[in-house]
Length: 107
Image (cartoon, rainbow, N blue to C red; front, side, top):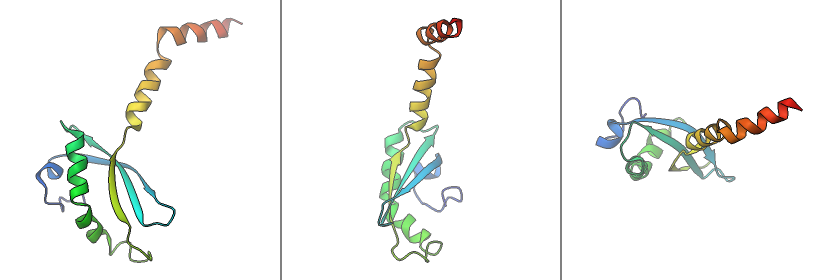
């Protein structure tokens, strides 16, 4: 739906959006989609635009999910896992950690 440009919102239409994960609530009534707007200047504005269009997205997804008892409400959140992985990678490459690992290898 995002690739086909079905959502009529200028910000969403001009931004490449990667959906990395969707978590369902235990009762399957809420679907939280973690997204990464690629190349966007304001990630929060893209998330807000997706949340404004959540009802439309829910309606367009209904036929594909008709086997579900309840159609889930869609919520969009910024995926920060890539940022977290980059921080961990940076820490692992830091001189202090390298020094500690080198000392461990000598033992």
